[in-house]
Image (cartoon, rainbow, N blue to C red; front, side):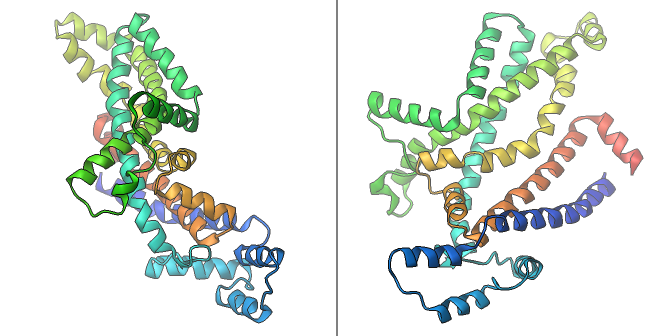
Length: 333
């Protein structure tokens, strides 16, 4: 098992290298750069632009260098100093911009992940055991709604219901009067009264998909002979379910850990903009619109790294849960 973990960690190095190249290519695809856009904007507003200052900034940020030189300067600073560069738009280091927002993004993604798994797995097991029951049809209907309704539309509906029915404004992470105050018990409860909305909205789409997956895999396992044999031996039904079909049926759920974590982290950008959240999503959107390459590149690189890490954690969890996978990997190693 240890050798497998070491091999996977070594395999992540070229993966992260390729991810960094793709991230840099993506942020280089639009024509021009932030400096060019800024000069055009100033000229359109009638402001005289000093060409010497433009040339100085171009040389300072290496915008006059070939793409491979720009990539080397960018990735070398990240690897050696964990320096993601300087934001042209916010006029401050990218690290300072993301550090203030990544924490909230991770926190909301983590809560959404817990809600998603904590609800989807037991419900998927229940509707599989009660196939074609009223509960099965009900949760299947909710699942289709969760998959079909866009998150931003659901956010608008819930914000409207919360304000018109309960008189509570749930946009943002804090109330306006609490946002500038230091942390206290009142501010903590104010945060809880706001954070439930983005957590639920992000969890709904993933929950609907996982319920369908868990239900389908459970139905396949419940029809197999080993379940019939376990029941024939007189084992309690709950023990039969948890120790046999659930342990196998949960494998596809665990295998989704990698992409689901990234989806919670990056898939709610539009929702975050609609809800006016002080998270990383709106920063990415503004950076892409203004071609702030260092901010956009840092965000894309972090998402790619999370994908690689999530895949590693998913494989390790599968090896822990399923002895067949664990032993097979040990033999391959």
